[in-house]
Length: 292
Image (cartoon, rainbow, N blue to C red):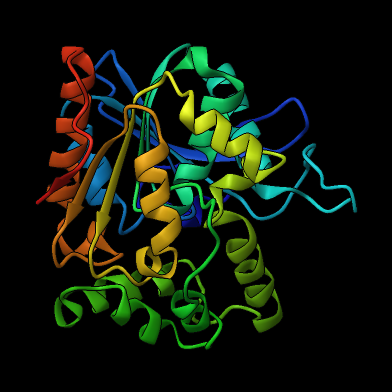
């Protein structure tokens, strides 16, 4: 069990294909379920606990190794699909028949898998800070910083208030052992992140299939971005194209916000999530573009 990736109590379940999935949960007193995947649950905890004021939230660890049954043609694991398959297996094991998916960046990818393959289970998808990329990259600033080997540099660039937030993020880095990790293993993990975590379009077999799916979508999708997020700007054309071509999308772009909003302004992120779900539950027309 990867309990070191969670701040607080951790639990686990084992899938039919032998993978042990680590998770945490909050808000057990509520009936409606939110599934929130992530690589680690330290800096994500403020968001998780705020959502748990209204929902039963499961925080599911997205793993980098172990048994798999989603493969590419060359035999390598397709982690975009595997994280989604893990989430499906997790829901099945936990008896979750229908849920709202909350995803931030990398954790939107399993949600897209679920929307594509098991739409009957997904009430709504909050695809925050990330959309499927149909137009490629316009820059590579974020991943260049990731491969620099200096976590502090990347974290600072992802924070609107680095003087306040960097210590919190670096505390997470130390808690999960990334400050002392095997460099070779760290680089392998970074390679998986670059190839799969920031590329939810990998859930589909082609960009054409992905685009057709977005244009015919029937499940509500909420997009949230910050204007100063280097990852948003690295894929600016793709993000704007997804906003305009995801049927009925609810989109908000926050002026001046950066990538690590879970540290800079967690309550603001949660408020936007609650507003999105309220719009879904009201059954009215979705807001197409809101600049806040």
